[in-house]
Length: 165
Image (tube, helix red, strand yellow):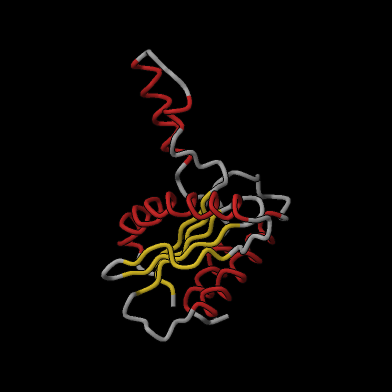
């Protein structure tokens, strides 16, 4: 069972300040703010809403590892496995990653104490989340790139997280 699921856009740029030389301090502050905004997840769902900020931190800190794995895979071969595996483990949680062909990143945080959860079950969860995401992107009322705010999507993701699907 997952405790948190996040979907992060393909436009995440952690090195955006290094790419452009900006000399004005005011402009730099605005640019830095826009870079932080790009890193914000398009969707995040936690079983315990009180811990959402903590999970956002864990999700955003895992993006560097996701980028390293994506870049390593692209250089090694053209055959890409969408499932990135465990990104890192903490004392209380394990963080897994998945990236689509369009570079959307899915992150699942699971409880470390859940030893029964295997990679195949995590892969299955990612496939279900990917399917739900594909359905929402095909929705004519969804604007690509915007945060996902549909209640039906959130309910479906909660069901996937709890294993009731």
